[in-house]
Image (cartoon, rainbow, N blue to C red; front, side, top):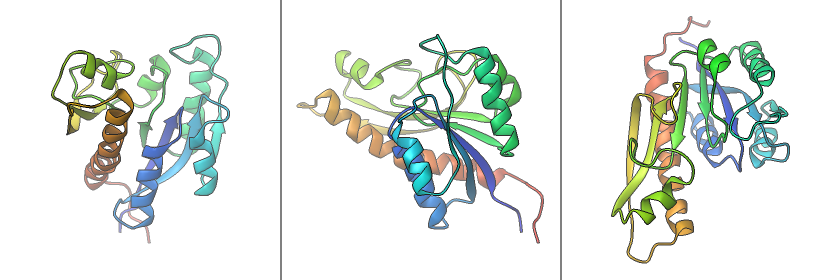
Length: 200
């Protein structure tokens, strides 16, 4: 019997994608375990959820930059992930760009969920970008994280139609529901390919 794939989750918000992962893990539908949750927001909902699921949830002070962690902080995040024996890092609503230390420590072992059908509409508030562009279809994407912004290899996508009377909030809610299906499915695919050591 192989042991579950060990996950580390980084998030800045409410943690709805983390909840979706945990529900599938607890239901036995996802062969993985979340070892640690890390947030750059001290009162983030994802940390409360981590406590609810009895998983270590840690806040890291991000530093002076708006879009990335201080290098020393990112090094500390890498240390925390390694201490938790994490094998796959999931950026689930993490509003900081992964830089050198994370990327070098976890090559092709960091994935991100993004609210558009990449390569269309990378960056912030992608659902608003899709509405402003007059698109009739958008969705969400899970991809490997690399040095570019939302440019890594695409692992899965799920489409969401844009309705005639859509507002940014209504569209965003429907995209999030699609994310809650897509992210666990992609992690399940990765877990199925994972060949950790056998456990007794």
